[in-house]
Amino acid sequence: MEYKYKLFNTASKTAKENNLILSRDKDKKMFDFSLLDTIKISEEEKEIIKKYALKYVDPAFKKSMYGEVFSYLHNCNGIALYHIQKVFSKNTGRRLYSIFILTKIKHYTNRRKSIYEECYDSVEYKADNQKIESLIDIEL
Image 1 (cartoon, rainbow, N blue to C red):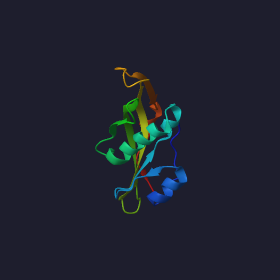
Image 2: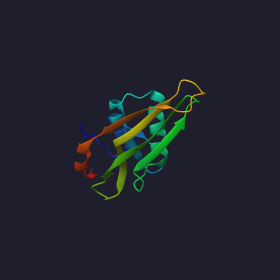
Image 3: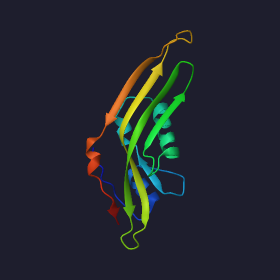
Image 4: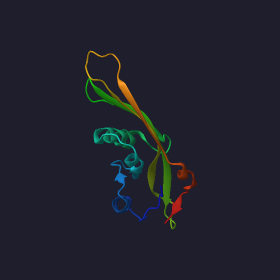
């Protein structure tokens, strides 16, 4: 996967132009979840991954452990790793915003046919992007 973005001075314009999800907090974080397109999981499970990332991932904690029980018959859990790409102003040297890129995920979908069964049938999904190591901080 290639991670080249059209960068602008504002986080909202950069997020809009690159189909990134902008966090609602004051830290100007945006997320690239394009790696999720490579694994075949339900949309509700993808939304859980995004929800936990938006809430808990930051520059100090780039790993997200998540889990959700949808019903007695279906749940999911996993761990996701993000790489941060910081964008700075060339004029002032201040950080304008950060882009968090999902780089590695191990996801489990657990289902059972009946509430009387003790064990879930678990399916593991893995996705990894090795090229992400070469990213560096950018100045605008």
